[in-house]
Image 1: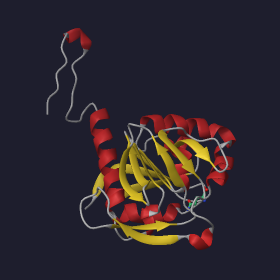
Image 2 (image 1 turned 45 degrees about the horizontal axis):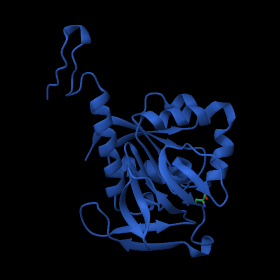
Image 3 (image 1 turned 180 degrees about the vertical axis):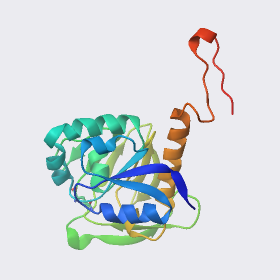
Image 4 (image 1 turned 135 degrees about the vertical axis):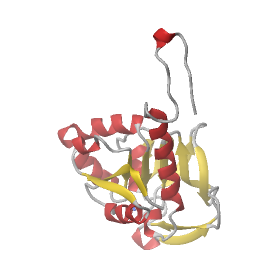
Length: 217
Ligand code: GLN
């Protein structure tokens, strides 16, 4: 599959951003590594990779990046994996830390123990097809989800893949598996958002002066 129309940014301040870039490139998607706030301009969606969420915050607190990222995630599709999911959460525990507050979940950092307890498992998901390989590395655990959050996969009764509106989050690392279904789901969300925002896209609205709203498909 190639997709020349989408540009996906990968936040590249630290962490495993390159694995996401490679997965997206393998799917034929144009990627941009985002290291400065102005590089958010012109991308259709953003991936916040795994890494260390507290370190991300240190970088983001410079030059007003955090505020601009908050604005971005409130408007455009964003996918967070592991530390990225922690940054997107409304509530962070162990310890409490600030976040982008874009996803109505409470998440506990390092909830499954130390690095040595990192694990790979296969589990059923709501995605089409076979069970999904999930790589957990010093993973956080989602302890609460809001009513608008859709749970797409679980580990021991705790959500590990969730979606709310234009936000997707995984507590595992789909970029480290060969299976690309989670990234494809995100690309589908980005495509949908882009089509509905694009005035030249399939949905067109007449101006108010014309007294009528028309949708043509
Ligand atoms: N333990 C990290 C944190 O708390 C997340 C680990 C990861 O992204 N693989 O931010």
